[in-house]
Image 1 (cartoon, rainbow, N blue to C red):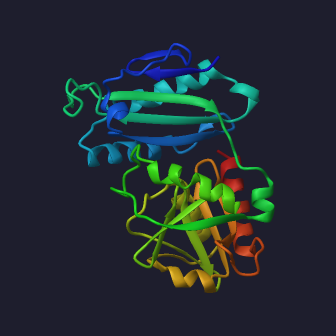
Image 2: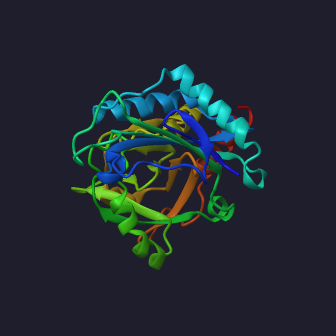
Amino acid sequence: MNYCFINGRIVSDAQASVGVHDVGFLRGYGVSDPLRTYNGKPFMLDEHIERLAFSGTMLGLKLPYPRAKIKRIVGALLAKNNPPVGGQEASIRMILTGGESKDGMGYDKRHPGFFILVSSLHALPESAYTKGLKLITREYQRELPEAKTLNYVEALLARDACKKAGALEPLYVSRGKVLEAATSNFFIVKNGALITPKQNILHGITRRAAIDCARELGMRAVERDIAVRELKTADEAFITATSKEIAPVVRINGMKIGNGRVGKTTHALMGAFRNFTAAW
């Protein structure tokens, strides 16, 4: 049996409920932040709480508890759910909404909705890291891209097209620039240097860790706009995300990236990141 935290209480998933008048449910007005465990310990929890708080401020929402208490709640949930179903590592999702609304629009900022969910981690298959992934481009820029809002309409609309194309997820592009994937940050490698968009994206925790790993390996990492046309000349590409870690991309639409295989730079970064998380 899994347990979660719902507005001040730890309850089983079977007993959990969200009010039908919560503006997160009625209007999608809220933010979330997912993280995972390594060796049973939440990975970069402080950074994820800070990003949740930042996303919340962009919607005028504040965390209802001090950060230290949120960390204690996460620890209690992990202990209550230990071990996760199947003995795997855990996936944790923190959610902050506007809370209950009397008219479907207004809400009381003093009483936000706050939830923490825990489940078994659903990681990519190992073949994704050895053979690489495919993405398909989609013209779109997220609203409030720096915030991790609850709006995933475009990502869900793209599911059928991704399935038909054999792609993991869409790669959002806008006005000739590459932005981010639906649930991941995006990088290309050119002449041994990492390049990743800096503006109009969500600044991922794993994205930052990948940049730090690259610099520790002596690689150059540049944050700048990437023109869509640059995909044709990229030597390698990869995505980063909590559940995906660093995952190679070998094809975008019908085009091979580089030689269509996992590149040596991406391979080195995957190893460095896994060494980093193994010691967490």
